[in-house]
Image 1 (cartoon, rainbow, N blue to C red):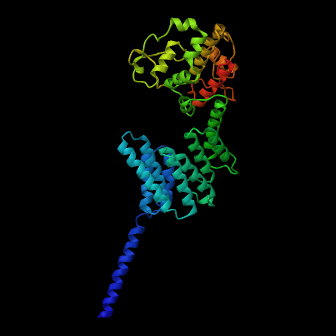
Image 2 (image 1 turned 30 degrees about the vertical axis):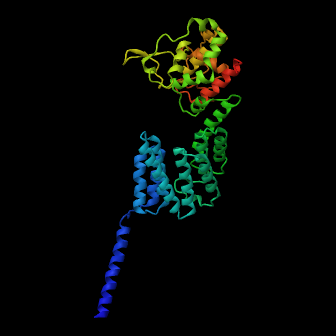
Length: 402
């Protein structure tokens, strides 16, 4: 009887054991239904700024294996982005704390060197987004630790190569406005022996950062200029602030064209959309001096002349702005018609008969703005911050303004 009871107990125990195992195995049974696949998909969705979809993929990876460290790293980045976007302090704090908790879990569950590498990069990216106290030093520590790891690059899910650490450290430096250090890190990626997935984005980032470094050579930018320098496009309000703060429009014009300064001390009117703008005073300064390219624009919807501070400045509009500054400061009115009558344009995308041809010629022959190697000027593209700052530097040199 005792023997039978023992056998029965053993049988029941085995049923529970195998039953439990069967339950675990059934959670993720398909070939592609595994934590690494879902993690990879989640990271690619992050690249597309699809945070909600990425969150779902990371959660699925955790469902398949809650001890899969990289999934927590992905969730840390998602929570950091949520915190950065949150306006409510409570939500921001909760999402920030959640991001840091996921980082801890990512490190705790790093079962291989490759997972530890993924943790350090997730930590770098999370801290760069949250920008807490001492965040740059912590990102640098993560970069150093990731660089010391001897990993099998073939097993680096998503990150693909160790040069990815240099890329994201470059992005951290860029966010910190440490432009020289950012350029150096992007250059490290470009100097890598192999053609990896980070080569193209690093090349783009290097060109942008190199332009900023060149723009800053010989001039000292204030906080406004540094913020604008990294923008992919410059809004009309930003441009007004850049000219007011960095070029010192009021001082230059008042000193060089006193007649205008004494006759027109205020803007003719205040556009309605400037009432709540953070760059109201700077925009009014542009209206006061009648800077061409930053004039009020008629809005069909409101049937009013508006400044439109949130609208991006195109390259042809920026050419108008720079040309007008050149004319006003030098007093050379002939500049306004210097290239009228040309039959052929040197730019394939700028007809000689176009309204902005003269302005574009004035800024390119003086090397204040650059065209592409193909010869195109890209008149309808938005001017980026680095280009605007670089043009400002060259303009000041041309006019001997310091």
